[in-house]
Length: 197
Image 1 (cartoon, rainbow, N blue to C red):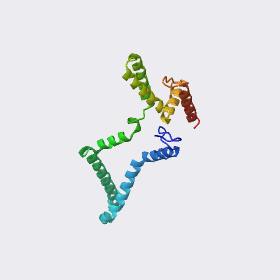
Image 2 (cartoon, rainbow, N blue to C red; image 1 turned 135 degrees about the horizontal axis):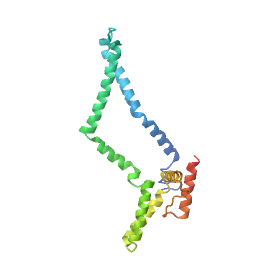
Image 3 (cartoon, one colour; image 1 turned 60 degrees about the vertical axis):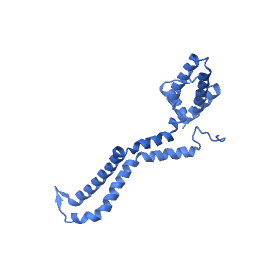
Image 4 (cartoon, one colour; image 1 turned 120 degrees about the vertical axis):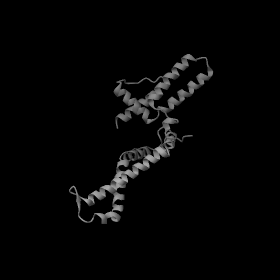
């Protein structure tokens, strides 16, 4: 059960969401930066053991052998990292399990729904209500879908999508028939709050 003041749909504390957004931004450049650090660090760690081969001030095509040696070590590190990546991908196939874990931890593949999916589900639910109005089990299922759809409107992604629909489709109030007036007003308020950010 969710305690008052903290909604399960909004992920809890706004600080946590802000922090995770910054963390995500840092991650975007992590691969390139970490590869640069790997190459630089390992090249400079290996260099003292091989530098004696390049200390005679010789050149090849006008380039000092010292630079060529450093370049060769750096290239070897990159090849080694790529080789480990191929082993991870092709030989062991660990990415399959990795993707399974990612899906299990993703709320949109478990209990949350994207707004575009919710619109399709809403349409299907409306059709099912008309086609199987006499079927008690079908109506029970439709009621569950309605409750799930209503729960999802409290998420920020839903408000952001609503805002996008208003701007792109130029619809002042994208119609969602499963919402009552109070829920529609609450969603509209959240959309307006996003526009003011």
